Image (cartoon, rainbow, N blue to C red; front, side, top):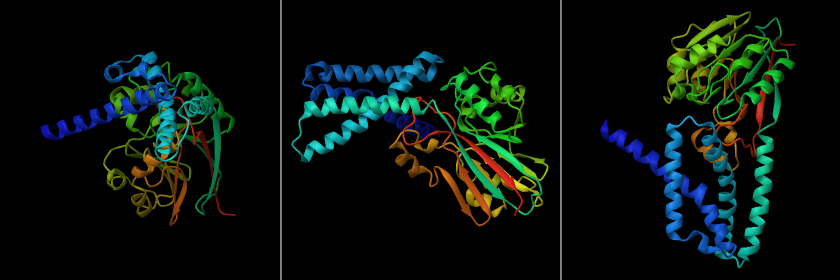
Length: 354
């Protein structure tokens, strides 16, 4: 047990130190060098700055400072963009005779444009519409899914915009597939706009709710009028909504579905935060599985890394009679940036055949 804890801690801090250098230090180091100011970042300065950034990151893990998170997380996103551009140029200059000075100028201009675009994209909401038909349905039902809002990383202003967008769609039901909030400092006043929603709200737990503490988060959500489904189901007319808590265990969906009485007369909608366990959903007769978690990578080309962990990171997939929809998320975690992805509110219409 001690060895596993040590190994996990060592891997975590190795990742933090590597990320601290690549995202926060490396772009500045390379650009100052290419702009003919190498003395600005000599070896001792680089090491000192690296250790300083690592210390600030360590402090942020134990702090509830919104300002500190804003600076670190947004710098992280900006640094990631410039890391990608600098790294690509570093590879090119191994084979090609290029002018470092003008390349650095170009990287600064291109990177700034990309960063501005990414920040602007993260402020906009898009609406995705899906439609499913099933012979068991005699009525029409409109569900609206939101996921990964990340109140904490994002402001209450974004949440108000989301609520207004949802109400304009006139849903019968609203479902939230986890990671609605992501900080322990988030209080009832920060999620108060949920009370303005004009349809019943059902919620499945995400990993960030677990990190923030379920003993505090669940009552806070319930006070805002949200029904939290924790390995539970609820029948609403001809629909059965099932919510399962997020877990690292890949067998979570199969195990928990085995403990839930599934109504074969109903169109069954499963809410699960991460896009895992679809095979179990298919074999259990689930009709529609709604997930989030991946953010569709949020900032390109990070989606390539996300795809190594999850086979399906975005969009609609169908197997047998079961549909899986993976939302790209309605908010953002960390930097308020979107590149190659979007903030989405998903409108799902269900009706009978013909």
